[in-house]
Image (cartoon, rainbow, N blue to C red; front, side, top):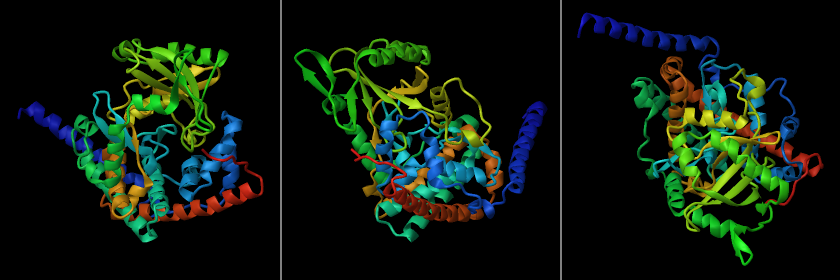
Amino acid sequence: MSTAAHRISQTSAAIREQRRRDGRTHRNHLNRTRLGDLHLKKRSDPIETLLSARKSRVPALLALKYARMSATPFTFFRGAVPIMAADLAREPHTGLLVQLCGDAHLQNLGCFEAPDGRLIFDINDFDETIRGPWEWDVKRMAASIVLAGMDAGQRRSTCAAAVDAFAATYCASLCRLAEQPILVAARHQIHRMRQAQAVSAAFDHAQRANPCDLLKKYTENTSRGPVRFRKIDHVIWRLHGQRRQEILASLLLYRQSLPPERLHLFDFFRPLDVAFKVVGTGSVGLRDYVVLMEGSGAEDPLFLQLKQEVRSAYTPYIKSDLYPNEGQRVVVGQHKIQPLSDLLLGWTRIGEHDYLVRQLNDHKGTVDLRQLRGEGLRSLATIAGELLARGHARSGDALMIKGYVGAPDKVVKSIVHYGLEYASLTEADFEIFKKAISYGRIKTAVPS
């Protein structure tokens, strides 16, 4: 090695070591033992916090959202991001920032088709994405593992063991990625996924799912013209007139968000029909449109989803980059976290509302809670740890986080404690929520 190369190598090593030391100093912000503490003093009324997030949602659909949330503590947790965002914001944090998924929970993991046609398993919902402390994603995922496990009939001790596996995998994976070349870490592929029962089932479902299946599920043929959407109560219905025209017109702005090679492909499709669709649990009440398009004939359909995006539930508590469009915020955040994303991912605006645009259910497969029995919960939790670690390594400084974590035992123990405690808090909030329904403070409708 030349003298100059040796000096550069020494300098690089010194910089890396300084980043690790800098991460260690962040224990002064929040030491590893206190990482798992809940701070419940001056906690706001959880129902009031939940109701304060109604802005920009369709009032007529909120009753359906609350009905879906009323099923179990886990379904409540899925729709109650504003409550946890407020709780996390009251706590001290490490100050080590990454691009947060924002709504990290087990059922926001799933399969979808990558641009090259391969099926991949990854985080698949980014509505709440924002730049924030790495541990907020980890804490939310930890609580979700407990609640999803309980929903699947697991004992609390089994759920605790699964959170332990999740946190240990997160720490080990992130520390390993911190030592890899930057681009190698960014492209990191997770192997042995199909050995996890829940993931294998999601892959099997995704392999069977395709746009032609959606034609059978959501559309009908008529004697009066081309295929069109059919009405399914509480699920999907056709749109007409000015609203339909506004949605189709918004595709012009969407085209500008696509890179040239993907725009070329999109321009081969022509729109046939437009519908309103009710989706998810947390997203119920937001506007969600589907445009049925046709490419090279009836056997070449494209279902394009336009999903309304509002500001992240974390926005009031975090100084973060501002985007002119909330759909753009989601797209940028998703690209930072994921190595591979939807081929047609983009954004647009309709009236005063922002939208994420993507394919609807193109070879998608979700996690079935029934697959979390036995070893299913632990195996999925382990994969969740590796997926979050990769996303955080791609979007933050993994070496600094490694410096903070150090020997991981204290961090793992804190995360397990937090996951169990926050799950118990959610169960208590769920009971308050059900009482609010019985008192008429919250109105519900029969879920689909």
